[in-house]
Structure formats: structure tokens, C-alpha cells
Image (cartoon, rainbow, N blue to C red; front, top):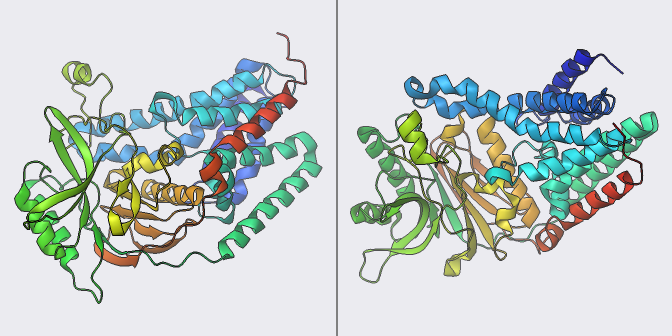
Length: 491
């Protein structure tokens, strides 16, 4: 089909084009040709190791562009960390692409290599979402986020979107022009169904009025004593801002305050004074003995007027190298490498796992701290909530693609589960998201402000909420049965 190194170069071009389908670029019309080209290149490689190399290069180029924002945390303390940024991006892109390379190698074992690679890549992406704590970011199916085909996630989830995307890209490779026409027709049908679903009425917004508070605190200054007080006062001022109707709940972002939950009741009293006694949900750090936690606490006035903690959640899915360091003591002692997010530079402990918080008249919510909203399994690990609440500090992600990709993934979780999601971010984007993933109101990136928005209603449980990923798994297994009808290649 093409020369040894020519095929590798074309795979890199296809990877870059495929990444341009991701948020924030959303050049969706590049997506199917890019994946079709990659499938064709891998299937035509001279041997399974060359197939693996082409697939790995395709994935590496894709992740280099799609995840280029991963260098941003290294710029917070540039004097200490900036030297690591290019290495982190290259190693992360190349490491994640190993899953794609493995799919290419596996495809070389079969006579129908194109079908084998599409199926193996779908399986590899599902595996990438769970292995080594998982990182299901920039999946092939994520190219539809914010577009009508995203609504299909209510039926098949993110994994199903990936399988469908690869299946559509496979058709032109297998059936040439007939396959291309069929892929366009099927995409049109999915697009039309998504438009139809978006046009259906949503339940009335009869829920509580929620105030979203976005202080726009620069991460470089956040923990410096003078600025920490300034940022805390911003939270207080935004919380106390007048309104025609008093909110029923105020929400602050992740790690919003410069004190620990267990150390400063004076700070909690100041928060409740600013809210006029309205309950406040806020991201806050806390300790328990020698362990530290990244937590979400809901506070309200107690029986004698002092603050009481009405609900508490400790973040369960921590960010490797961000909130904890694997083999952390050895990494700190031997290499001088510490995690980024904790205030003093050391790691958090993980909470016991996903849970629901019953807030009485405010309903039952599932708390999500930062990138816990990236994991679809996280929302299905507990009973169905009335709504989801994500608090995050996207200042770590910079000003480019990262915050917008993170927001899009939160919208996908709302579509999958059919429940609204309240998102409050330190620097943005804070948003009220309805049960079909629509953004009803938002505070833009790098802006300070507040929003008072009624909580939208939830839809009946979606097929994905009831069945999870099983429809996609069954479809993938049927594809594998088709594959095994053909004799494996002998080497």
C-alpha cells in the first residue's frame, strides 16, 4: 500500500487530524476520514510489528495534540517544574499510545486486519479507561461532545460512542465507496436522532435555586498568604451578593479556602455569615490523623448557631502525580519529586469511594471532585442521584483546551445518566448543565462572578443508566465472533 516509513508518516498525519475532532476544535468532518485512513494503514502494514508501529505513531500524534494542555501544571512553579513539561507530554502521549500500538499488533494476527484493528482499538480504549487508575480522556467517541451524536451516549455510553465511531470509519475500508456512502447515511441518521432528542421537552426546573461562585483565583498566587485572604474575601463577597430571591444552596469550587476543615471554625462562621445562613457546599482540605483529604463539605447553621457539617465527601479517585505520587516517599526522598495539587506539596489519601449525599429538601446528589467526572463507572457505582455536583479547580489546566475538554466530559456524564449536573470551577468554566448535557448558564473561563440558577429536572433513567456498558460490550463481542470466522494469519 505504501512504503515502510511513508506509512508511519501518514499515520502521524492521521493522528493529528483525528485529534482536531476533539474539543475545542470539533472539526468533526475530519474524524471519520482520519480513522479510516489509520485503519487502512494498519491493515496494509507489512507484518504485525509494523502494524503496531503505525498504530502507535497514530496514537502518539493524536495524544500530543489532544492532550498538549498537560504541560500547564508544570508552569505553576516554572522555576521548579518547567523542565519536566516536555518530558511529561511526550511520555504521556507515547505511553497512552501503547494501547493503540498493542491493538495494531493484535490486528496483525488476523486475516481481516481492518476489522481486527477497529475492534482491538475499541477494546484498548476501554482498557485505557481503567488500567493504572485509568485515563479515559480524548477517546475516539469524544469527538461528538457538544454535537447531536453525543445524545447516543444516553443509550450506549462513552464506550459505545467510541465503538460506533470506529465502526463508521471501518465501513469505507471494507466496502470502499459503498461503505463511505453507508457511513455518511448512518451518521446522518444518528445526527438526526440527536437533533430529535434535543428537541424533546425537559422536565420543569422545579428544583432549588443554586448559586455558583467562581472567584477566578490564579493558581500561582492561590496559597500565598496575602492573596489567599483576597481570594477568600472574593468568595465571601460573591456569596453575599444581593438577589431577588435568596438561593437555597451556595456552591464554592474545589479547595476553595486557605484553611483546613478541622482547624478554623472562624472561617466557617464567616462563610455562613456571608450566605445569611444558607447552606454552602465547598471544596476544602481536611486531615484525619496523619492523613489529608481533598474533600467536599456541606455546611449550615447548627442548633446553637455554630457551623455544622451536614454532609462530607472525600475525593476517592485521585490524580496520579497530581494529588499523590505512586511510591511517594521514595520519589520524594530519592528524586525530589512531589505532587502538585496539595497545598504543602505532599499527597492526599483517597476516600472510601463514590457515595450519595442526602441533603433533604435539596435532594440527593452525587459529589464529584475535579476529574472524577471523567470516569463513567463512577456515576454508576452508587444508586441514581437526583443531580450531580462537580467542584473543580481547572486553573491547573491552563487557558487552552483542557478546561473546555473537562467541561465537555461533565456534559457527557449528564447525558449518560439523564440527570442535571452543577459544575463550579475556580477559574471556569462554571455551568448549570441540564439532563441532556445542555449548558443553561455559565461563567466563562478566567472570569469572576456568580450565577443563581434553578436546578433543572431529571429525566427517567436512560438505557445507559439501567444497563451500563452492556449493549456496547455485546456489540463488540458480536464483532469479535465475526472476526473469528476467519482463519488467523500464520507467521
